[in-house]
Image (cartoon, rainbow, N blue to C red; front, top):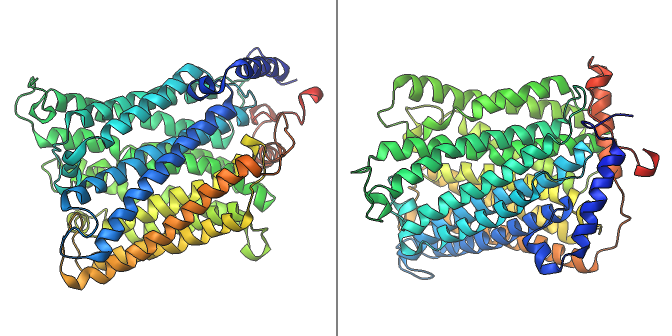
Length: 539
């Protein structure tokens, strides 16, 4: 029998039963605040992400309505000050709230399950981290009118003091959750066995973001102790914008890859189930983990390409890395697509549709970005037009959020033991999201190509058509997200109950495919990831 450290699978199950028993004795309000069971901890983190999706989506619809109605800045919907404030709040809700929490929620489910322990290490850290980071984001959102400065002017920022404090609170909370996820992956170690590929990507992702956050945490402390912090504690004297920008972007470009790396891990776990065969090739994919880690940590300087940074960092190191990081993504998607084979022979459902579309959009976004954004000659101009929001929405909304929609459609039935209530609502979510966000991205892309400046509340009338198309697309995407939320609520209360298994069948099949693929590539039997039994009784 395979062992997990000094534990057998039966020992881990015994520990898990104790967790379930303790959980059952807690009242509902306490389980909301503190839970140990991995599915419940994952579920409430995902639900917090959904709340931020609704908040960020509401902010987006206000922006799109305002921009679609007028090019003069006259406050048909909101005043210019509120317009810029909402622009900041939309980004923070979608990136820090939605993207980060859905990554944590998926990780807290997949890591304990894929490793076979079903035990979350340091659950107190995971729970505290969730609520501390949520409190931090809310403090940032409550920055008030001063939040407009985040996107009307480039750094150094001049937000309210509670924005800075909230930012560091959020980072501290994220560190706690990431520590729990990393430690959970090391619950399972057995005589040189390798972690499942999906867990390897997730753990790499957590380590990268944990290290990168040190930089921006320091930038915030520096700001609070300078005139920027507005606390009267001016230990650092007159603020130097280059200090803030360097520290901030060192952390906040790895942030761009935080969600994609976990999405890669989840996708590489799920895709073989639709292909009905192992992925080509697990050895190459395992090499992509360190390659993506190194490149993801090295592309930050292209955000400050016009600043007086050393040539070796700005133009040689960072710009080259910006171009090179497309290569490992291309390798991963090439292996995935040849594994899936002829799309006409696949058994399509909404999960596969979202995952497949996310791959296509990532390729499109990469092609769109590569000719211009790694180049110091064009990047400063591109960054100041609607071309960049087009790229960002392709990558965040269509690739990342769309991909995670697919992952959630797959894993949530196993978490709540209910089948999705409505396939029709799921497909409305898919097609509405693809069509709506595509309209927005294309409108921004064409407008940016013709010189439409971003971060503005008024513009020449010639650009208004692009904002009008973007407004239509935004509302279509908004209704599609509402279909997801409605379907989730109906599923929780009315969805067909599913049989509860110790380990879902899909998990065993996915790991069996991975083990077979690794075996075919020459891995030793004792190196293969652990395969949990069909039932603990059969262990």
